[in-house]
Length: 110
Length: 113
Image 1: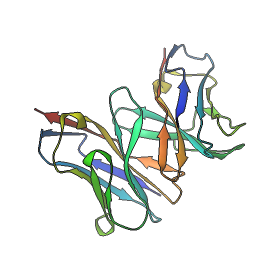
Image 2: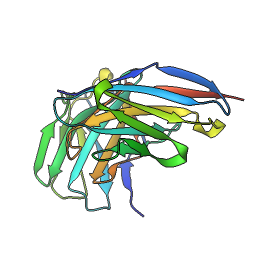
Image 3: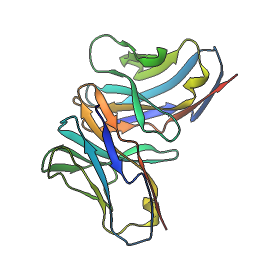
């Protein structure tokens, strides 16, 4: 079954404590992306990757890092989380038929 | 540069009534246009997309959308609303390949019995 998985699904953390949200897809897609969803703002792209070792900034990259060492995985890293990064995060994998979204990670930074 | 505007953050219709969710876009390149649906506590699911060719696009669950270049619009419609259609809907635009996609703010659809 084609799917995009994210872990963890829910996370509460404190300001400044580094965290990583993992994303994995089993469809062999080259392109993957991270979004955050906030009320009234829709989804905003954080980073995207067009292939292994190829990443680029989206619209709201500040405070985030990503890596793409292998095609299936695209982790999102928050080196020093802050409360304004409290949000719902979605990873997506793209093919010619559209984007496949993960189930989301709800992050709360206290 | 690309942008998407969804008119109306909330739309309420009666069951069986027409659903119309409005989306206008701007794009400096020929756009790819998408509608996604998000049910509570779930990720986004693709409803339909327009890339090239026929401007009337049919999607899942009886939804369709028409690309009108002259109006820069891609409104989503469904002839008869069902209770299960209650969700949040997002319009999105991208260039060829869909690499950089811009989403609208979303429209929450309420369906009254």
